Image 1 (cartoon, rainbow, N blue to C red):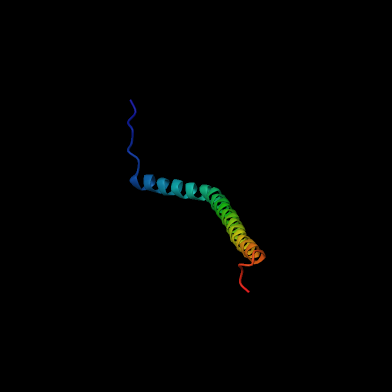
Image 2 (cartoon, one colour):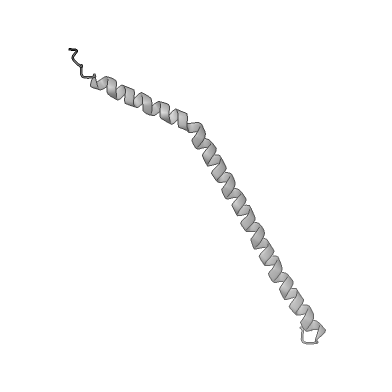
Length: 79
């Protein structure tokens, strides 16, 4: 019958730290790619939001100009 020797606590801690460091180093490229893609998605979303806002503002200006033109044609506009 063989007896099982208890592992050295220092060796267990050292192995755990080494495994954690390897995990962090292995996940770093994936994390960097994730952040890059997330920020690209946020930037394109903001670009579309700005485009929609500009279209809305232009539509409001066009509506006001159209109303003013119709009022001017009917003689009720500013003179």
